[in-house]
Image 1 (cartoon, rainbow, N blue to C red):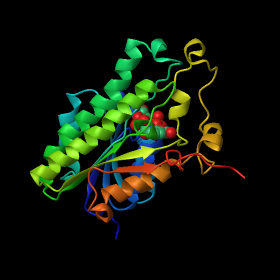
Image 2 (tube, helix red, strand yellow):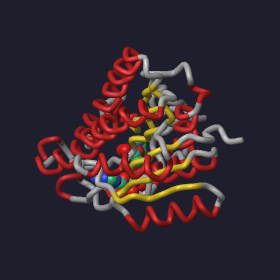
Image 3 (cartoon, rainbow, N blue to C red):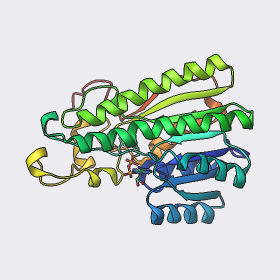
Length: 268
Ligand code: NAD
């Protein structure tokens, strides 16, 4: 018996990093998983890994900012697996700039489109399907520790992740008011070892760096536990929020950050 037997989940940005770990973890616990992403090769590899481990998953190509694609994603999920119970709104990008004055409007818009509009569309389109399934539901939004405190050089990213945090609480209240049994929570990862770090554009003039930031180096000094987290450290928290183990949690924020937001550590 898995914790998520008979449940159906959508994981956006499921081809890589935290999303892939979430898809694998939910599938291991019995959920049938629809992973969506713009990265088709990564999505195909993910489905092969899940099936090889005895799970059930489907990959669908999706840009989360494309509103017209959302009804198709929901319809294909219901056609294949009959229902929708869990939404992990995970797709996201980070764009850094040495100062906000160096941030271009195009980068600002791209980041807000994926990190905020994409989460809005995930939620808007999953709620009617969860209500049709009639067994409550769990929406998990992947925010960041950058949504809890300011981040130099990542001000735009912080703004998007702070928006996601309060969006989650607002939708939690809306669903609680509707009495539909849908719970909504946000997850706040710290420094996690995923490909996202290598994708942060390097513009030496704008960022003052010649290479993308190294999560291991950042975590050695920046995280009280002294190491970067793994994508599975986050997926385990997402599993908890997706499952009945968290049935009394809504509007909450689950911080999984190796202690980053707790304070500073005195190393001996
Ligand atoms: P990642 O780059 O490994 O994975 C992100 C995935 O999102 C990729 O597969 C990418 O193709 C996909 N994606 C990007 N734009 C998309 C779009 N428009 N439509 C659909 N898919 C799209 O990064 P990750 O570290 O696994 O990040 C996952 C989430 O976790 C993001 O929201 C990120 O902001 C958040 N997060 C990551 C960290 C970290 O340290 N890695 C820390 C805090 C929060």
